[in-house]
Length: 147
Picture (cartoon, rainbow, N blue to C red):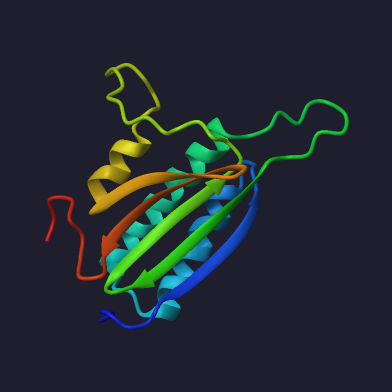
């Protein structure tokens, strides 16, 4: 089982399109496997990455229907240090993410609620040219009401 140790990191640059979350999940799976992250933690990491990437694709994308416009790009970031696995997504928007409770009839809007449940900590950092939204979990196991 992974615990403590030096910082490991990984970055995958992605075009903001319909396949972004799928490619991101594949990358998280490969990296977590290489780093020896327990499967239960990896399952949570896959969902966190998927939700963060979907949010970035939905809320931070640049419209591409105009001539000369290029798809927005995002970066999937992973860090492992001191027994904590952090999944982050960097996008080009400086709009702060909002945690809210959607109505029962709404089909979307629960992504950050899932991230908040699965991660021991989550947040965002505004950077020049965008932001990073992240979720961090212990490599010792899930904290979302499961053992």
